[in-house]
Image 1 (spheres, helix red, strand yellow):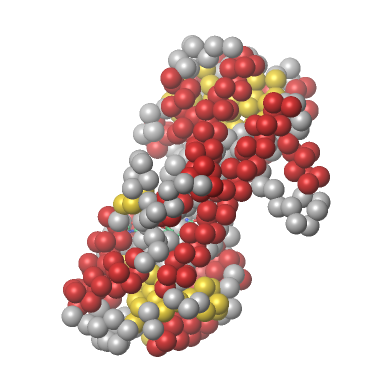
Image 2: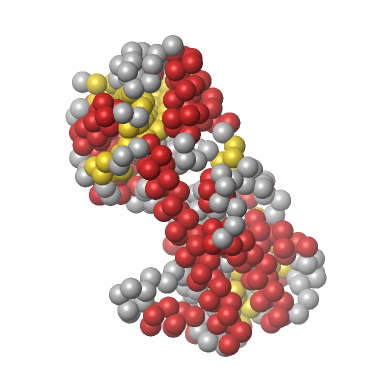
Length: 425
Ligand SMILES: NC(=O)c1ccc[n+]([C@@H]2O[C@H](COP(=O)([O-])OP(=O)(O)OC[C@H]3O[C@@H](n4cnc5c(N)ncnc54)[C@H](O)[C@@H]3O)[C@@H](O)[C@H]2O)c1
């Protein structure tokens, strides 16, 4: 049985580790700098919520002793035939790339790697980094030659939170290699471990570019939907109806407009192109449009309510999207800044976060004590809990802004409140 180390037991790394540990082919070490994560996984439990199938796989791996978590990456790597890197690369305020986590992971790998090991990068990366930044660094630290004494591959993670286990086995895995030997080793590893279709591409750079291109496609198409929604508002046309009608034509795939694009993927990865030379055009415009939607939403509220000074506004959802506990670049953060500038008091509700977690973002966690004070409600992340949300309890609420165009407009209007969506008057 081969040993595999997964570096980074986060929302993506842990499900991957759990599947591999149950494949019957591998003993898996999960390396993470977070002690709580390591201790939880070593009890056979999941530190991640809302990932269907994960708890069961972790329980089974615990029984069969095929998954062991550790904070000592170097030691785990030194015992492994395959190492997978899945720690984040983030961006700072102006989109500059922040390599802090992955650089330190690569340091640990370089110190531990033995001859013949296959290293696979799965983290979304700027094109060229696997070879030039990380492969070279591992060569320097280990003294081993890339492609000969250790093998190097890049294979992006293309999964969606809440559906990761399913996506990992159902989506074709795009696999690339530094050389033929690396490509073949990585391809056979994924076929064995995930039992999935493998789509080989000709270079590390093609695979890296592919993943960012997928994210850019989403960002640009959401921006298009947002632009059309704002124009529909001007013409007093309902964009929801337009999209449904337009998408009945098989070549039309209009996305849904909304109050913004959050998370650590779609608003981040376009900068991997922008900061590498794609300085103008659709990609940069899309970023601007999507980041301006919070401002647009607040303008819509003002147009209907007047000044927001001294008003009490409740935002539903701190997470960037429904049913995922992930606040990175959430549109709520942009909304909150905009509303505070207008002199409003902002309350935030999110069933996935506790009060301390919500307060740490500089807003007041919503509590029933202020129920009667709320003037305006903005839906930002449509968690399942909000499907049955009792808007009727908010007796002084004048307007509901549906930032995802998902609420029942007639129900809200029947309560005597105004309803406004993005491109829906
Ligand atoms: N979350 C998604 O929906 C998604 C989808 C597709 C691809 N991805 C890719 O997966 C990457 C990881 O995403 P995630 O959602 O799992 O992130 P995450 O924040 O949930 O988890 C990252 C984990 O890495 C650990 N970590 C950080 N630095 C480390 C180090 N030096 N050594 C060991 N562990 C370290 C953290 O403690 C954390 O547990 C993303 O950057 C992205 O490239 C994510």
